Image (cartoon, rainbow, N blue to C red; front, side):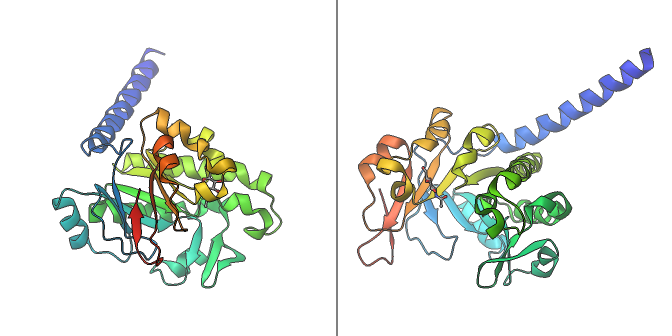
Length: 263
Ligand SMILES: *[C@@H]1O[C@H](CO)[C@@H](O)[C@H](O)[C@H]1NC(C)=O
């Protein structure tokens, strides 16, 4: 009895030491709090502004590039799609083994998130690539697959997919943190209450366009915890007054639609 208590205590102590190390690593970077400026170089964009945070593509950018950004004082977020298999990625064939039959865009299939725990090693490998390249955080895209129900995974519904989506996202956040990375919640707004304590900041597309009264109130939970919310609008009217009031660092397209303007 006594020795099993001692063993249990030893295990608890080593787990505690491990999580303290990971937390210390994470805290060594500046937190992305409310009001953080940013640059969007991921998703195929070439944003000329120089923000404190810069969002870049994980798999097409080099370690030297990440290093140059970090040396220049920027906080680097590395983007990858966690919810689709894209045919231009180096690990595409491995991802396709766990993809659903349904395509999202040409050359891009939804992952079958009911099997997330079978393909999580592929996602962890991408996080390790982010660590190796020196990224501070990650943006994991297409984590709202569950909202598409059978359009994403045949025979499933939004309700049947939701628990898989939440478990997959919590695993991603925990794994990122264990590796010393921070993580953004990308879109996936209906799960904010389930995930707010796991996510370090948020990135949203088109909340002014899609919210009732253009008001992005779903993000209040992030604002309350002083976590940054980064937003883009694809129209040429940024509703900047609202964005400032709502605590959203917003970009929108200029009148030619070819360059981002910061609110
Ligand atoms: C961005 O947030 C709004 C709610 O504030 C939501 O309606 C919208 O669907 C989100 N964007 C995407 C692409 O999910």
